[in-house]
Length: 281
Image 1: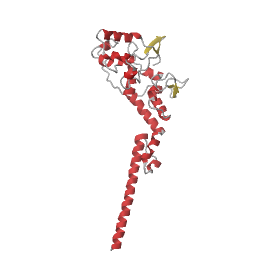
Image 2: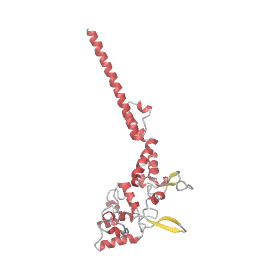
Image 3: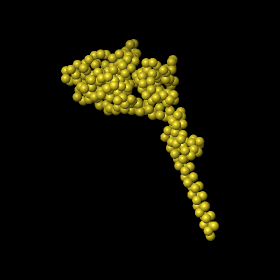
Image 4: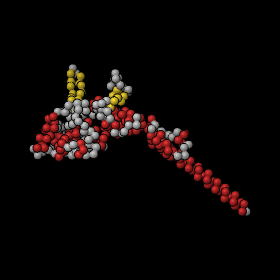
């Protein structure tokens, strides 16, 4: 009887051990599946499924081409207006540069500050899918890439690139503003934006749209022979002069101090888009 009891106990212990091992294997497989889908968007490989410790493969997953492409697409969708893709591949400059940064193990800040230019390869049509990232001593992340600049140049009457300034702040510091709908016939010029309903976003505070746009180049639209050409020229000084004149007359705003503050005293992150004004930004 004692022998039977010992044999039964041994069988129970073995069965429990086998069951625990099977349960551990199932947990590892579930973990592998979740990791692979979350990071790469694909099912786990047979190698990863067989790994008793799939967490140890996270670095490998993060360095995979699948993750790099997936995350670059996520970044591009996040940075684009309304998460819509560009009309042509080169307009999605954040995707190509983000992928380049990940593939080459560059700091993420290179996406915004790196000396690069993202455009179609030399000799290719504007809608070509052959988009390349090139080193450019005048580059500022993807912000000076011509297809991106054209896409977000905006339609401000005097060429002030409010849309560009907003997208730069949105992409770098996450600023989110909701555009208001103007009434028919409303003054949408710079003077109109000084009105009570508009000045809060355009001239007040650290992230005032017109003030940020004032350090960027201006959009210049030229029409000749039925063809329209868009280029970018230097900032016109009268834009700043008008604003500071309003401040002296008592109708200005605290944000006018922005242009006199050294970079070290600006709010965290604001110095990212505010680089010296250039004709190509």
